[in-house]
Image 1 (cartoon, rainbow, N blue to C red):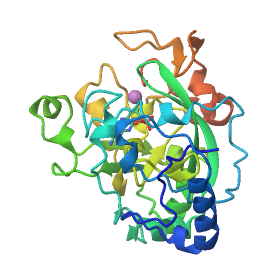
Image 2: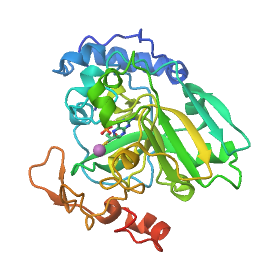
Image 3: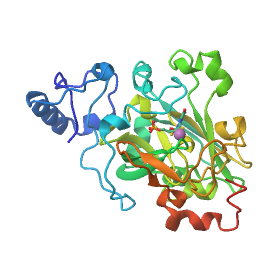
Image 4: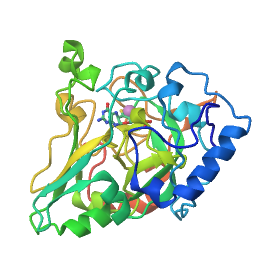
Length: 322
Ligand SMILES: Nc1nc2c(c(=O)[nH]1)N[C@H]1C(S)=C(S)[C@@H](COP(=O)(O)O)O[C@H]1N2
Ligand SMILES: [Mo]
């Protein structure tokens, strides 16, 4: 059961009016009214008044790829984030992201493909039906969460775009907009990361059924701080590969620019596969703290997805190409 604040409006009045709300409008209003009448738990955080708590994804199919581990608390998922476009602190991102406008939004698919297209975000969600996928997310900083994402397999969008035989890699780019993203205005952060934030995958990794594009979590539209309106999730890689607020996807011949890798190749490899045996130069990767737990737990090879993904790397020296 999701937590809604008590002044939750019966009719959504926000600028976020996805088609799905209209599609399920009757049911949505019924639910929303019931919830606003019921005694609900207020979110005790200052930015909650600006949150968009619409539970817009009804009766989602559950993915067979979901983990059965205990979910990380919703409040933790939306209040402990890494999103450098908004700042350096993890607990302040949620507040700093509240003026961000994730709709209207377009995602451009381009490069080495026969069917390039500029997608409207809601058109994309309609075209590629979403499901619930519960994944572990392991940050390079040795913490992890278990999150019920709402999304669809990236391979569906790739197939619809008809990549050419030259498409060996796929590149992703986040919005670059100083007006909306305060972290992009600060010199200090500018020295840390060149904007826009970019990431990339090898084509077989991008086509893997575990790789998804996420548009929601916990049955809601994706909160701004978690990468609204659309982000990548690659569960066997460190969190920084899972690029947020994507505006562009490009098929390329060569290994694309990847922000953390290019700015600090000693510390962040292009592959960034979760590997307890390869330490980060400044700390061990052998264990992780599951957010909400006290004791650390051992980190698993490929974040526990070895059975599904290890074969993609069987001829690679994973200590050299980390
Ligand atoms: N555009 C962009 N995407 C990003 C980041 C970022 O700073 N900018 N941080 C990454 C890192 S380091 C992590 S751990 C995850 C965190 O996702 P979450 O806040 O939803 O848990 O987002 C990744 N995606
Ligand atoms: Mo991270």
